[in-house]
Image 1 (cartoon, rainbow, N blue to C red):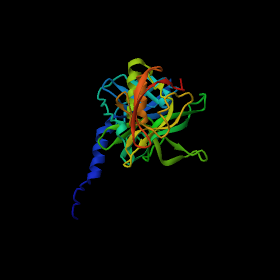
Image 2: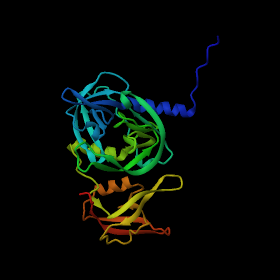
Image 3: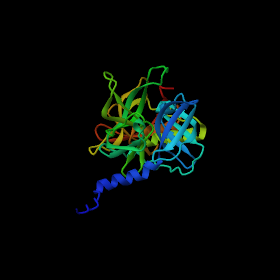
Image 4: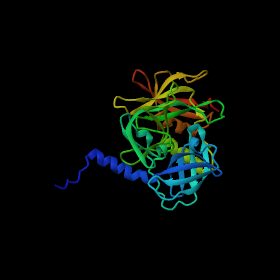
Amino acid sequence: MAVPAARIPTTLEADYRRGIAKVLPSVVQIISKAGSKELGEGSGVVYDTSGHIVTNAHVVSGATGFDVSLATGGPSRPARLVGAYPANDLAVLEVDDPTDLVPAVFGDSDDLSIGDIVLAMGNPLGLSGSVSDGIVSGLDRSVQFAAQEGATPATTTIKGLVQTTAAINPGNSGGALVDLSGQVDGILVANVVSVETGSTLPGIGFAIPSNTVTDVARQLISDGKVTKTDRAALGVAVRTVVNRRGRPAGVGVMRTGAGVAHAVLSPGSVIVSVDGVPTLTVQALSRVLSAREPGDTATVRLRRPDGSTATTTVRLGRHSGD
């Protein structure tokens, strides 16, 4: 019998394999414990060479200890909680022994476009090192989730999420959303559960964008808490606007809040920069505002509905969530 020739992967298959090879060694499995009792399991991504792991806040909730092991295999190692920020469902752990940990490369999530191929990597149902694929199917999603048990209110809303068709299942939480270049563009957070049946809905999953992840992780590692958020506000409801190619093109004003003095920021206008910093997405606008304080002034450049541009100086208000 003839020996079959080795199969040569297609270009797309080769891209998949390269992306997986770059990131999967940075994905970990997390076992959360209270004393000797296991509470649950989730996933995480190696953030740096110091042994910091980023994951979801709900993965670490209620736990007093953690065991971390590489998704590619090897012994587990203990870890401690550095800090958590439930508003974005993010947390950082630190392992006692960072030997052999390979940090992931975090990309710029503002570069994501609808239709981009992405991979979800984690440990669904305890199956470590699993990979599923899909596309970016939405940007800047606001999604309401059930809050942690006993919390008030009973639901929490997370804004600015990346929507994906890649399969996300229990145990994937805290894993990596990866592009084919091998960069982490988000941290997996959840899939949608049917209210009627309680089962997951295939093809609808969400991830926290990488720019939010790195911003929150830096603060948790430095201070143990998030000290800067988007407290300053423009006083308008906004959404990310995409162009015909599905790429972010600015922040559209949907409506203005009560008492907003800068009438130039009218519904239909698109904010393209603040103080000279491009704001192509709501996340980009939030990061600019996170470095400001209520009462500061800011120079806003915008595109009007008729296509003309304008620049105005506004005084920032206070975010209604404060």
